[in-house]
Length: 432
Ligand SMILES: Cc1ncc(COP(=O)(O)O)c(C=O)c1O
Image (cartoon, rainbow, N blue to C red; front, top):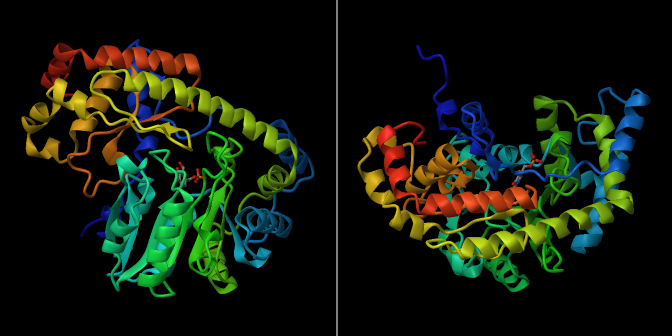
């Protein structure tokens, strides 16, 4: 008898959480590591939000509360989403979750039967793909186009839609590419969905980086396009906008109250409710005029870092890097490094059981970490299916400018370190 269910073997993970012990291992060996792996802003929680959370704790606001989320917060979210997306909605369509992540998997449980098809961006946030086989659905990766700034080509989406399509994930600004769909691209995507999908197909629009958009642009949601609100779940939260990943506050707006209530029942089954003191903090975050200043300071810093990092990456032989329009990641194409360090050859020489667990970009990621002290994420951490032959790394720019400079100095050295790379492969440790 097996201890663990077959289904459990089908769920994947988010590697960003798994690389921590490797970083510690390098540091314990006496080297320093520049952390470009982290998906969280390196800014403190703004003081006005922190003060409200403290005040609520002092009021003993620490008990069970509405599993849908406290009404004043849902009202603030409804007003904010309504105004920014130019749509009509009410607080009964809003549900709070412990972060932006839980509704991703819950949506698959709620909307999909075994055999249904789920379309999701690749490269994309790993949790979209991670859940699909676990719920018995079929993964259909929608490959983002580097030449479109990692946008979606509407005809690529059209080609993937069948009568079994049930759920379509979109994520702009995107993790890991920083890509943003232009309003024209969104209109074309919406047109494809309206023409080819049944009205019960849901679009899950993950807008968690909505406030981190560069060059003075504004975030545009697909839900704002005529005929899309009734098909779209708008999901976002407090983690990135307010540099509050540990607050575990996320929310989604559903097309109907009936759907919202089904998610509320899932909340009751899984975690009952989320901490009321943090919900009060989130209400202040959304409604206070002070928040705009904190967000602006953070986005300005990210943009300055992006400009430096993209320029320097593009000056490294073997690297080409798109200019991300949002979020806080850069996603360089490292095909030239794979070629100059002969990484494909090294990969091909490995035993099959190791090849199955690694990839050329993983080998370079591990070499960078263990031999040159830079922590990054490999391509296959952002959707494995169909990622073969794609050579990219994700670097988070949620790290101070001087640390990023140091990371780039180290990458420059690593790129020319053929002997070091060969030695790393020969040693055969930490290849995935
Ligand atoms: C695209 C995307 N969606 C959702 C999340 C989850 O955010 P949270 O930490 O609020 O659960 C992340 C976090 O990295 C993300 O990048």
